[in-house]
View 1 (cartoon, helix red, strand yellow):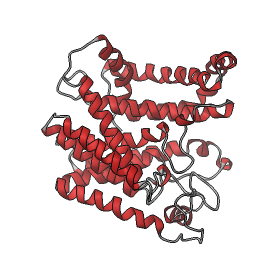
View 2: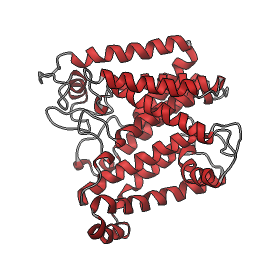
View 3: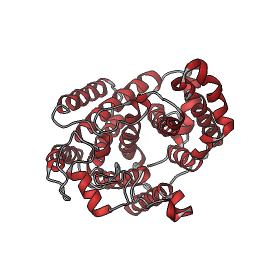
View 4: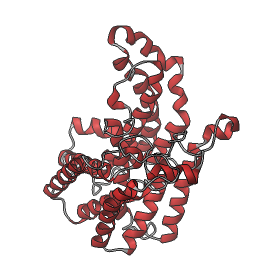
Length: 366
């Protein structure tokens, strides 16, 4: 994903970096809470849905992909970023970095399990590359037609009989054509193992993820032309309502990136973006705005760097030093509230590194 420009430049919409920063913070908190789950109860909404349904944790990754799309028309206005070889090279860098992070412990100990082909950054890289090329080669109307076609056709695609004979049932985990293709082609190199296993960032699920990026591109193009927030509110609400209505037939499932999941999460992301724009874009600096920017913008302008640092340091969360407040707060407050203490301490450590980069105006571009 294209890195942010100098955060001090007044012409930049701060809402874009704020939403990206909130998505990265959300990723770190969600992953950290999953680690805390082994020590006690955590709030279920901070954990991913087991299959169908939607929690707060399920919103952060699609919001990030949505922002990948929003950023494309803004960043590709620069000639050097609009070069196709530049786009390809950036895509490959993201995929390679994602492969390293997905298998970092396997590289140290081959007997720890099977390596994994796909992952979060791999999907980000693919979505960025495909959407950026489409932005340069297709008209806005054609891109929206492609996005709509993907979302409509993905539904019957998931209902095709599985390749390995597992009974098809979209309401049960892994029992669909999307998961079976992962099992057949990726074999054991998936995130969810077993006879009904699959990869939540697998092969076919990348198609609706691309549609999510294309929707983001349309929003980015609109923001370049106009700043009226009313169409953003209307568009976000329309996608949210359409996704909820369709979900009675095609469930909202993050792990296969269902079309309803795309519509619901794009709708929520767009509403949040409109809200952030209303609160911050073009508004005078206040104490509240300054506090929010200092906390969130360091994650937003170096998003991939923050995520990478988290992926290589998450073991710090298990240190006794960080778990000490959890053990002290758990008896009086309960494990759900106490779990926030080590997670927020760990998040603060990553923020310190990102804040240093932000103050120095150092932008790490992957």
